[in-house]
Amino acid sequence: MTDNNAHDKLIYDWQTHGPEELPAPRHKVMLDDETLRDGLQCPSVTDPPLDKKIELIHCMDSLGINSADIGLPGAGEVAREHIKALATEMVGLNITPNVACRTVVSDIEPVVEMSQEVGTPIEVCAFIGSSPIRAYTEGWNLERMVNNVQNSIRFAKQNGLPVMFVTEDTMRATPEILTTLYGAAIDEGADRLCLCDTVGNATPQAVRNLVRWMRTFVQEREAEVGLDWHGHRDRGLGLVNTLAALSAGVERAHACALGIGERAGNTEMDLLIVNLHLLGWIDRDLTALGEYVRLASNAVGRPVRDEYSVFGKDAFETGTGVHAAAVIKAFRKGDDWLANRVYSGVPADDFGLEQKISVGPMSGKSNVIWFLEKRGIEPTEERIAAVLDRAKHSDRLLTEEEVLSSAN
Image (cartoon, rainbow, N blue to C red):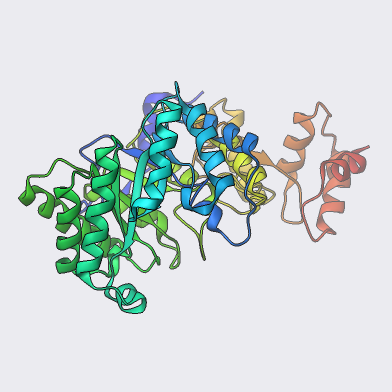
């Protein structure tokens, strides 16, 4: 049995030796789940039936996710029916509802009605494109954009709704445009401001620069507003950009289960939570996180890739002799902590998962011995040799049935 006091000496952490590029947030990290709105804009997923959405909402709540975007009222009657049902289901839960609306009063009117019927406020996420390229394409001028922001937010606040003002494509907007739009939103009483990397073109440094600019702007306005971050994965940087935003001062991050969303998708909520845990930025029981991934996968019809980080079938499985031998030695020491870290950057047991030793063409005797012992079969030399002979002539890992039939 390894002395637990010695564990800290077994892994050197380069993050703590050098300039601090990703300091921990000075505030509580909040999460907004976009799976049931922005995530469903993914071209290759299906819109789940209401019962599956409700099941997923309860799982989000159990994971401590603070809020969820439950739809776009402007998408039609079915969308509004689901929003109302989900908001009703969320009464009494810790997770709170929000919805996406264009910065037009007609989009917000049904939210006022639904909030009154449900008996709880539904946060309005009022969005408008903010980049010069978007305005040029749409034929918008800044005066018209400001007018839309003012009228929509004023209407929502007059009707008692919390408002997050969202600037789409914030990362490609000028400080002058953002100053004007955010200033109008603050003047009308917006509760939160959301920065967006809508087309996924940002780098972590660009995110830090934007968030720092935003914090200075808010402080100079002496505004009491919360800051959100919403990022996409077009360059594969969605997750690291979200961590950079939180580190730089954003309080609430948006993400979707499995990273689903338009084009290359959004920041992965499940992997964001994994990294927040490993960085020590959140502290909660995450053994249900795998269930969240499973529910979301089934609900939207998106299979989890075998090699997907942490939650894919291959994430904690090995048939390689050297790797498996190290894991097995750790288990034989009776040290689960060691076994879950000697060949893993992510401890499987933190998330209700486990290491899996398999047998294949790159396996050694230790794989076979462990495999058989775990199933109550004596690993005789004859059995080990028979299994290895079959494995060495295979072009893949053997199934459990193939290993057991070889050992008989």
